[in-house]
Image 1 (cartoon, rainbow, N blue to C red):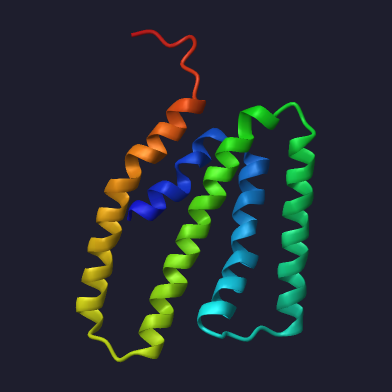
Image 2 (image 1 turned 30 degrees about the horizontal axis):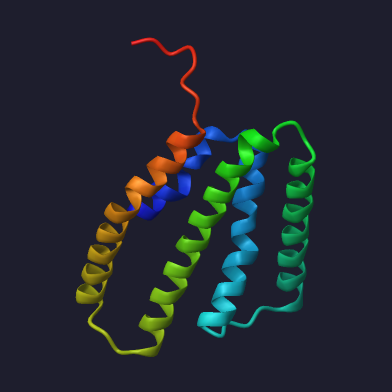
Length: 142
């Protein structure tokens, strides 16, 4: 479950309006990856909805880049989007393998879990280093 940790780690440091925007970006990203990996077809209304969400997220980032919060939240936003991207690619890859190849589900899930565990252990110092770089500990007392 390391991907969930990485996905929501930056969520503690961004305001609610930005978090909602970042969570909405998951929808068009997931649609795009599933169309690429699994060749899933979407109807026109779903494509229009995904495009509207994508455009709204882009406009929100343009607004964020022009605001006073730019320095405070942009790094966490990029970390959140990167984690969401990794999460979507992971799920789309696993689903494409399971749908295209006859595999033993128990063994496959166990193997994937081990790779996710080791990947999470390797990525933890990087994520914590990025977080430590942008956090301020002013006013904290031991």
